[in-house]
Length: 255
Image (cartoon, rainbow, N blue to C red; front, side, top):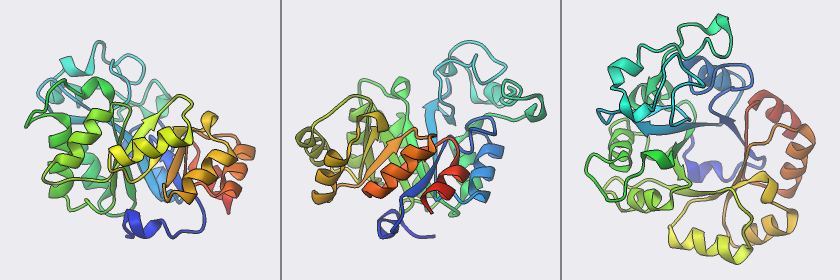
């Protein structure tokens, strides 16, 4: 498996599966991730937050209602309770019994098959640095699995990324944005966080901005792109990676 830095030499954009193959499978589940790998995704993107007993878990929403059979906030449930929830039936009855993954289970399942983009959810970040904070637990876990060369950590909570970079088992980081930003702002953000890449909402990327970032040596990944015309356009502009709910379609459109 190539490292993040080695994969930068790839002539085509990275195919990044948003919460796995989430157009056809329930997001952030084993079936979704396995399907994405089978369909040729180079990187899996998933979300990380903490259970009540401070176990890093893979789920997007801060509450359970949309994608599980539970109710209430993720942070109010212990992991052994979360692991018993049905995380597939909301999507389709055929996925009944899909379970909520811990980050440890996710890392064990993926091993070194693909690159990983772990997004620390803002609701998991805390106001002060803790030895059992989500950033520290994530760094330790990735190190234990020996995946530090293939894992990229992103977050809208940029203080979390600073903590990841300062950890003794530091990992590459990528600030996430969901607002327009100038080239100068993005260059400063990249420098201030000693970032590997910038991850921007595809609606706020144009050819001139991307060209400026490329000339600055800043890799750029964009989210969430499901329109084939936009996939081709971004690919032609030379973007580093495209995050999509449909990795198979993306792979075909940029090939």
